[in-house]
Amino acid sequence: MALLGPDLALDPLTGDLAMSGGTFYLQTSPRQAVSIAIRFFVGEWFLDRERGVPYYEQVFVKSPNLQHVAALLRAAILAVPGIGELTQFTFQLVGRILRVTWAATTDAGEIGPVVEEVGL
Image 1: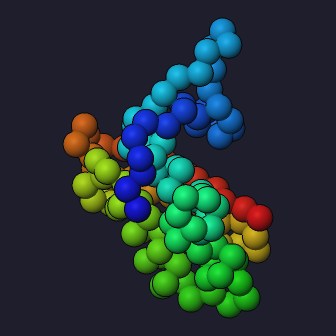
Image 2: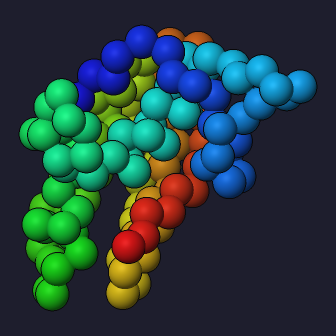
């Protein structure tokens, strides 16, 4: 799932739009693109309902297939432009919270480890 162009910069702690003095900034970092890819639910984008991670259908279900969940998340991360390989990847699924820890090599060097949370 290649993401399109730069995104509005997000605060890495809150996930809110980052702004300074009333100005929004654009961001092209692979770290933010991975964060967006991990948090992107299938059906969320009106221009392509097939893009994203099928959280409702395959992750946040009773007795999910954890190997399949790992494959879905790895694929979402590796599809981000600029990500070379995952050097660390773990996840925990507790109730309605998914915590993903990842690190990767990029064209510009190493990223991570980074912890991302997705919840319902």
